[in-house]
Image (cartoon, rainbow, N blue to C red; front, top):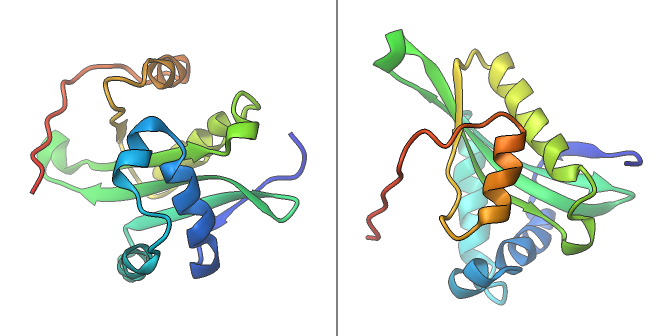
Length: 150
C-alpha cells in the first residue's frame, strides 16, 4: 500500500476533497466544485468543533481519500458515546487498493480512543458495492435510515 498518512484536512485540501465528493453519480448532482466558498466555510465550522474530524489520506503528496468522523455524546445505551462515519471517498484510481479499509480502520480506532461504544454509518441505498464493503468490515445493516431535506 506504500506510505500512507491520514491527517486532518486543511483549506488547501478542499479542492481535492470536493472533487472526490463530486466524482460519482450521486455527488455529481449535489456538489459544486466550481464554487469552493461554502466548503471552506464548512471546514471552518468543522475545525471549531472538537467532535468533528475531517481527514484526508495522503500518499506521495497526493490526496487519495477522505472521510469525516463525528463523535456524539448521548444518553441512550447508558450514556454511550457513539461515532458516525460520513462521506468516505476514495480516488477512482485507488479503489480496490485497500485504502477504504485503512480509512475505516482509522475511524474505528479513533472512535475507541475517544471512548465510543458504537460506530455507525449510513450509505445511500443505491450503493450496493459500498454495502458489501461495510459488511465485510463487520458493520451490520441493522436500521432503516430516513432523511428530510430542508
